[in-house]
Image 1 (cartoon, rainbow, N blue to C red):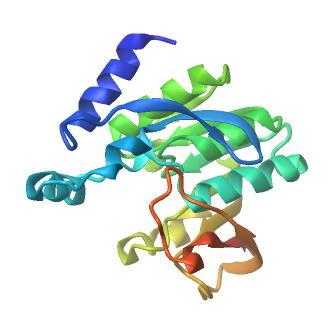
Image 2 (tube, rainbow, N blue to C red):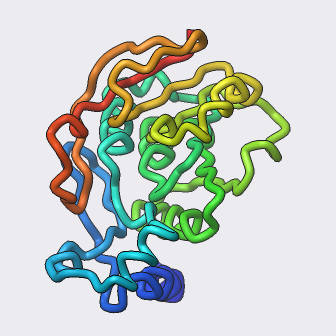
Image 3 (spheres, helix red, strand yellow):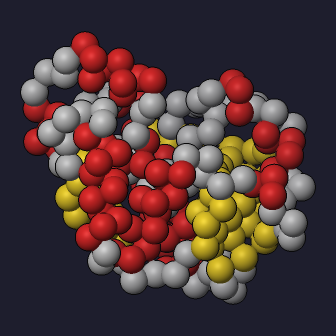
Length: 218
């Protein structure tokens, strides 16, 4: 592992929370590990300035969110969904879904995120798990269609909803996981099942946010 990459990520984190740092964290029911924020960092009250910085630029990439965890577990339980296929994980965050796809036998797996620091986190996590990912900061720059497009936690923000019609331009099959939208209705998608997930480190989220809805393109 290149310590300079972790140093860069720690620096990005400490801009928001002064004493925060990343630690290698195991994941439930997954043979993968991630660099996640040390939960002991969150035992103390945050200052008003820290809270505001976290709200302004949330470091999504230093958590493993319930939807991403549940989707990664699902992929490894259903490797036929990705085996030998070209896969892209949109809004990758920590890269957990792309990593699970690669581990399950995807021909290639791309972690796509607008946040360049998130892509650095994906690189660090790929190195940690000795898996080979590719990276993209712009879905719309992708010229060749993928076999499968994964997206976890994109439905919570209404600004993302126009993307759903565009996803089909980039992949034959689209699979989304979301813990905030319980019964999302869209002509292009159907809810196929409910999964269980948890956010790591634990943010003491309400129990309903541990219920993750899986949506697939029709």
